[in-house]
Image (cartoon, rainbow, N blue to C red; front, side, top):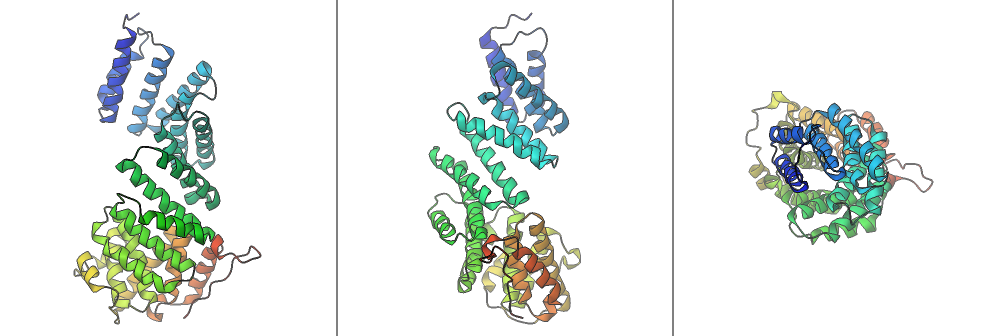
Length: 392
């Protein structure tokens, strides 16, 4: 047996954690090989930490099947040593939830997260707050993206907000809080909770250290708020504000979403030329329509910013086809992710477009009504979805 002292073992485990955080996986493996050998006598806590580090390395290197095996071993080890409600279980349960989600087993994923958050809530002083933040985010994401249970998602987001506001202020916490508030706005608007949505949007206006991405989406969601609660005169203002932040958005996916909404609103308002320029930019980011690559090179962000919302002119047949393709593709993509409010907005404005862009409206009406039925805000008093009528 090795005669390593408790202090030496603790230092080795600490070194392994630091190396893992730095992505030095080979070095971590070397340390773990020594620690988990039969020659080293580990205490219960040290063995838990070494086993967890082994699983974490496998997770980080995307060896998910082996990671799952080790996390299950950790869960069994902790349960046998400390019981089924011990705080040490939160981390492996959380990781099992993520692994099941990656594998498409959403029921199992949700179950792991629910057990983990129950342990966290019963032991808030013994579990890192960052783990609670992660679990609430995962649970809310499951309800929004896969279940469309927005009321339950809103509950998780409220818990997430409370936790973040109770923690010391940091740039990372502010970023996560901004994202959580955006999700709360989306849920509140979709549920028809106008007062709550307005309150959250007002709170976001005073949120310090908001990123440009968050501010752009705050304006986008303000536009959705105006769309659902029938204040269409305000949509222009909010989308112009989002447009003004295009050049500062850090992720192409987020930029393409803003551009898609700008495209939809522009065609709905008869600004076909501007819509085509937005669509060309979005299509390039999404790699949707390669045959248009290289055309209309003037449609860069600065040009769009200078153009404003005042360009109205006929567009070519090919540009009209691109606009329609972009909007239909994006609406279907949003719907597949249960983001029916996004899809509803896009199809609503596509239905208002000129005949050359929208084509036969009957198929679009069917799509719109299908999306409408998924959005509680549009539900009639009897609980059935109201049909949304749009001008030709």
